[in-house]
Image 1 (tube, helix red, strand yellow):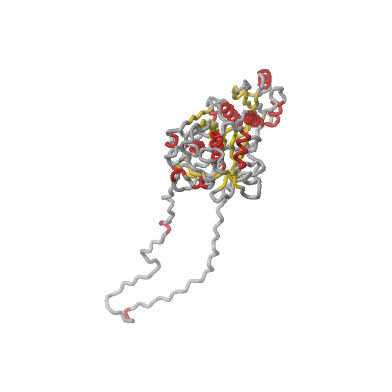
Image 2 (cartoon, rainbow, N blue to C red):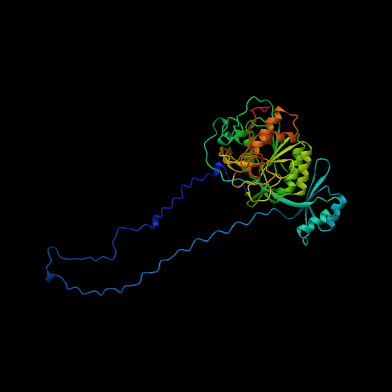
Length: 446
């Protein structure tokens, strides 16, 4: 999943000079020569010993050239799992149905109370049942009709590239959409974010109004280690980084409420549907109108329900289109109705080669070599649809600051109607409505 992009991971490869000094010939001595020891002065024929004639060595056939075998290709890494192997999640399961499921061999792993009084349960299936049969068994209960697998979701990003510092906030990727630093705009709307951990001690957040909420570690974190802060710090800094640091944000001064919903399992950093639902439910109680989700995974019925609840409450969710490639199935939550799906372009307005495509794509934003914070200190460029989504979230915040009464649907329309058409004329499956255009620095009709 996420590759390490930090300054502290910048290997100079100074020790990789393969000179093969030990393979060089000595060159100091001749071998196979004849040494003569004679008296001083001229030697006449009488002084020479008669040399014994030497037989010429029989010629040997030249050895056949040895062909080196091509190095064996490393086996392709096994695909990462898209769901927990033995888990089902369900919302609103009654106490009686839950008790019956436990009698039938299901194990209650975790239970959360959601806003509005419903519960969210995470169950381990009985050993003999396959996962499809286990889901069907939960759905057969009157209160478990929308049960689903516990799907996995990941952040994904390309390798970092060295780049010059961001002069005066005018980073090259931002110039593609003529984004100007904002100042004196007055209060901005708060923004929510679901991602990995965030390094709140990074210099770029020294003056930020930043809240980082971690989900209860008692259950989920007990079986894995905490997420790292690479991805979350980069996304958060792109939004609210201080303008006088090396990683200035698009909307510095806005309140950012971030939820760390990820864990690391071995080399796999991921969230799951259960955790995303809990994170979105918590953010829904924070009086937010905007949520950034720079992550992607498969469709999930219970996650879809949670997204629909927020959309019905006039919350605009902006999500990354995913980086699995142009032939991949649509990624979620970006492909859900009411969610703005954002793809990535480079400085030449060319589509990012790994970006997802499809009829659900709404618009494009800069997402290749985007300058933002590294996880510990300093800044680097980052690539992926994860880093395009914050541009749309930031633009939405500026429009909402100027027109607080805009509904989520009207706000989405405002963003998609003010685009630069790319690719085929009109809306298409690569760029959606086109390239995001920066609103006036403080929003407004522009």
